[in-house]
Length: 192
Image (tube, rainbow, N blue to C red; front, side, top):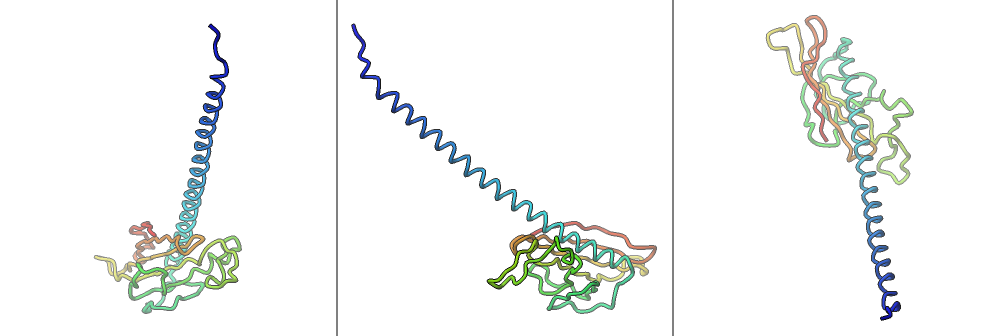
């Protein structure tokens, strides 16, 4: 008996087409996954930059307090204070509402050209910057330290932005001044 070779020619073509479709689907899913991973990495990097900006403002405020520069307390309400020095608030503003409308803008952070801030944020002529806005901090006087009237307790809250208004980090610390020098009671929470 002779085999019939013409009956098997179509099977190889169908098999090759099915394998080509499977390989194409796998390649497309890999490219899509790669794009998602790139976005996640970019978002993580931007969040870290916002956290670093907030910590930088917090450390400046702590350094300013430790230097003995605490000023007379004022009622911290809008607008934002743009200054090279800190300001002590007698009230604790609502820190849950973003963007913060009062506090001290940490101008030293953006004086470095690398840390540029987006200019003309609400304009079509927006210029490139590394951060959406300069970090902001509050120094709130919480009163005398329990059990030692020579010490004063301050709460420092700082906010930092990443490249967009949606990337925000907030840190907080409690700082004691007096009675032998400054000390930090606690701190370090972040959110946003």
